[in-house]
Length: 398
Image 1 (cartoon, rainbow, N blue to C red):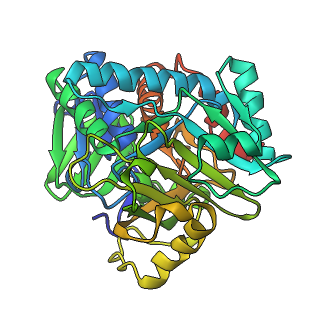
Image 2 (cartoon, rainbow, N blue to C red):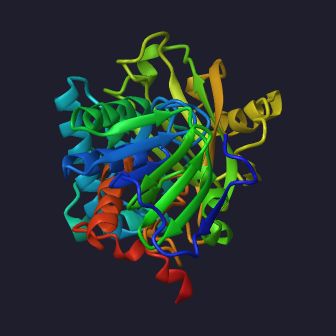
C-alpha cells in the first residue's frame, strides 16, 4: 500500500540523473494504467509499469467482474467519441488475445418522463448518431418485465451498449504491452517522487526507478502521490452485490440488459445481467451509484455488514422484485470523484515530466482504452489526437 508519507517533490538541482533511465514509467496498473502502458509499448517506448499490488486486484476501482458500457452518454456528449474509440479497442484487444472482453446485451435507462438524464442521453445520441429506442411505460413493462416501473416512468434502450470485463481487460492490455516490450514491476510501493530537469526519480520499496517521463494512473492513491491534485479528489467506498434469482432466465443477457434507474435525488440503482462466460452460478450484479462514505485507500478495508446489504436490497425490492434477495456475494470498491464528476487528463501543475489521469468518478472504466492512449500521447507529444481537451485542469481555474 501507499503510505501517508508518500509525497511528490520537485528536485531543486540541475540534471537529476546521469545513469540510464526508462523512457516512461506508468504508476498504477488498473484500467487506465494498463492501457497507457499498452499505448506506450505500441509506440516503441521503453516503458515500465509499477503496481503496488498484483494486476487486476480488488483493492481499488478496476474490478467487479463486469462494468457497464454505453454510448448515448448523459454525463457529457463530448465523451461519445472517446466511448466509441474505447469500445472498438476493447473488441480489437479481445480478438487479439483470443477471449472476448465486451458483450453487447444493450443498456436501459429508466426515469421519469421528464427526466433530465434521459433527455441528455437522447441529445447525445442525436448529436453523434447513436441508435437508441424510447420506450413508454407499457412497452418497457412488456419487453423487460423484471422491472417494476410506475406509470410516470419511461425508458431509453441502446442496443449497442452492454458490459465489459474489467479484470480480463487489464490482463489482456498488460499481456499485449509485455509482448510489445514493456516491463512490469508488481508488489512495488512508491514512497516518493522527485522531478528534475532531466526527468523523474521514483523512490520505491524495491529501490529507485528513473525515467524521462512519468504517467500517474494510481486511482484512489493519486492524491497521496500528487498533492497538487489532492483538493480536487475525494475517495468514497461503494458496495456492489450479486443476486442469484429464483429463475435464471430472468438475468439472461438475451432478455435482460445492463441498466440504470434514475431515482431523483437518491443514488441511481444500476445492474448488469449474468455473464455467461463466468464460472459458477447464474447471477446478476446490482449496485448504487455514488454513495458518499469517505474512505482512506490505505486504511484496512472495513467488512461489509448486514446493513450495507439491506441498504441495497431495499432498492432492489422496489424496482426489481423478481430478482429475489439471495445475495451470492458482495464486495466494496472505491470511487475517486472530482468536484464536477468529470475526469482529469492533464500534466501535473508545476511538474514538467509528470502527467496523470484521475477522478474517474465511478463512470470511467468503459473509457480506459481512450484515456490510456490519450495520456500516453500527452506525455510523449504534448497533446492527444483524441478529444480530451474538456478534461484538463483548466476548467477548475475557469
